[in-house]
Length: 413
Image (tube, rainbow, N blue to C red; front, side):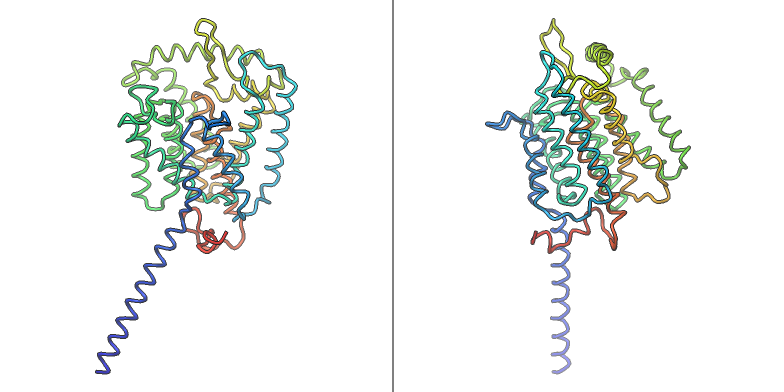
């Protein structure tokens, strides 16, 4: 009897330990998703006007996210990047001063509203980098939204502004292409198993094809070329790889932009060329310090319609002149691509951040407003986060992106 009783006690203890282990696993997994961040980032897909404010919902939600983040305790100190924060503040004040003193043209956007958007975008970078916003929850929330967008689009519920191409709530074909490109790369960083990485790469490559965005397809492919090859190369090798990527993208655009599945783009490409010609004329008319925020547009009299620039580099120059353009491009390169850092010290997450930088720099050439946007800010926040994680003291082992955000903090903060 005593033996049977002992065995029963041991069995009960084993079951209790197993139950406790399962509970701990479920607890730890649930701690990796915070519902507020998940829902707020899910809402960023919606461009509908916010009643009473006249601003798109996603722009309002960026402000809400930043304010929410400022109420949370940082996981990582921003002290290592305090100089970068000061530089952002100085440059925002500079472009505001330029805009305040400039005489707006007839169809220019309201520069104060655009400045508010830039300021909120800057805030988003640093609340993401510091961990005041739970990064995994944020990315999963937005990725869930853009995946739900797909069946809603093909069911005829979501908007269809470019028949034949996947857009939905992302409204514009180029925006849709850029979003599926960047968040496909980010999802590769979110998972650890190689099979999952390959799976997400394949899924988002298909989604990119459905958007019909040629530039985004090229950016996606070249980002992964960089991710696979750059860590194995010395500085000169990476410089050559960067030049090869630039040359390859130019070749595809100049010689193969209207072949195969893209043979029907002649009409749209003619309009794009016309917009580029008018935009370049405005670039040539721009003084050293720029024309002010909201001026990166062209107006066609015969159509009585304005078009924003397709080239984000030109947009930055027209709005803020050489100082602003150099700042925006340089901060993208040095924070994300980190060309002069030692490849032997790169973490896998930093390599993915570099791939995101390559994708953004390519997208900025042809996809309109790319630099200093919501999507750029999320990628910048991810890149800065990898630097802060590397420099943080007493990190301990990390699993994925947010291991240092402990379970007790997800409920208690």
